[in-house]
Length: 236
Image 1 (cartoon, helix red, strand yellow):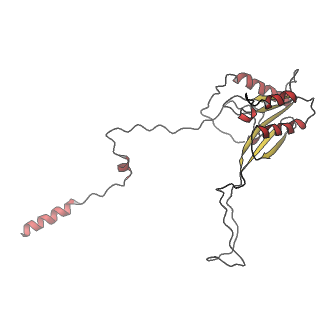
Image 2 (cartoon, rainbow, N blue to C red; image 1 turned 30 degrees about the horizontal axis):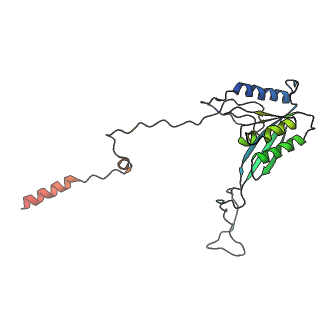
Image 3 (cartoon, rainbow, N blue to C red; image 1 turned 180 degrees about the vertical axis):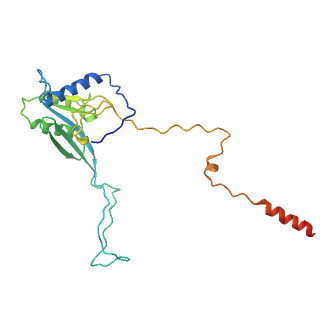
């Protein structure tokens, strides 16, 4: 963690912002033991999120190697250059991770895709960590595979059948996400990148841009030309 200064922020425009925020904070208090769980409240809280795509990236390094000219000595060849990673012939991977606030443990699965099917498979794994009679809650964002649609109701049907509560965070804000570290509080402010000041519009009197970019031209020395002309006139 590092100290950061936030000068501007973007407020959430979610109409259910207060209700979602209070519910997530209530689940955090239950997981930390600050508040007793009420009737129907979960006793286990997970913070779940995806991270990806994951791919192998070359990193620069340093080492001692024998000096060589040209191709070098076959017995002691040069160090191979870093391979470029412009193409992904075998695709990329995605990390699905969940942080258990009570046990202080992080669980993760690496998948080829992060669709609704993979999300439900990871949720079934989280459900298997506790007995079926223990109600659990999963705090997560509004990523489309996390939601139920008119054509696909698998998420809501699975949660109702397996004693699971999905606590969705508000729009345009960040909660405890595993890839950002085990944060136990809600960050209701979202930093905004500072924009450069707007440049004034060009006026008709301003020179063209290609003239501005050109280096200053060297002015010809007219004094020497005048002196040469005078000498020619006096001779004649």
